[in-house]
Length: 408
Image (tube, rainbow, N blue to C red; front, side):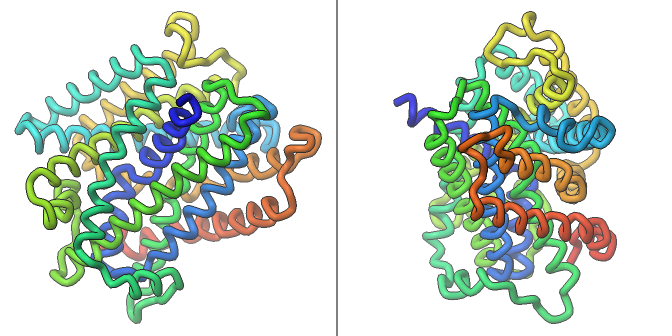
């Protein structure tokens, strides 16, 4: 049973990282514009994040070092500090967007004013994180996120063109829409590899007390969570292609993205879809808030542990609470959650090399990892994907400007 429950770390990381607000809307928009043509970007991002998540979990288990304990040594103090500031700014933007999404879902369920729902939802979330230990946080949000399976079932029931979906695993650029196609390809890839996923995952491995003997579990947990998240992301793309593309609808509201789940099954499925979305965006908000605390404490060598009472880890507690409070204040300004998340996805892509380079170097270092250092195949895959990350980071902002943030 303990081994089974360990899977919730991978599930929470995948559903809170893969299927957060940005991925839900961004992927469905991609399906609404290009049908199945961007299926390959999901596959590419899934393999890349499995490779890097396995690496950071292995480093955490063997060397007992999470990501931001590695960053300053591999990048140097100055570049490491820049990475810390940029990563926590990304956490803040993403957390604010997810809190805004929580308010939207609460409003749809209850009719409450969105600003009131925003404050109430943030307070409830903060209390949950304050009270629960790490294991119960991951179990609560990981298992509740499984409600998103309703999107997968809906996609299956709507009978997609599986041949076209399979052909989408090979890139084909539509005529006259090269820049827009590239923008969504980069955006989907970025959303699948958002930095807070590996920050949270590596910290969670240490919270769980993993050692070298848990390396098989690390492989299983990282792969199972990511595969589940990838399948659900594919389902979102399929629903966009089936429901919105033939009707020339561009789904630019969170509420719109829940509607396809209701087509095969009705109102009950719609409610389950909204609950699944609520679980995923809440999970992402928790991951980004806690990652803000993890990053600061790991970078400066301060004590951190979500399993300890808050008063015993004051700096960690102040950091994650501060991230949540600042995110709430940012959301209250009135910036639309989708505007925030679109910016965070592109910003995350720009700074992504600064996170994944240290992980790649540390995992392949025999002096640090001994016999558990990355093998040749792992290293080759890591460097190939790092090259893709660098290229995507270079083109991300120009594509955002050219396409006006993906507007058709």
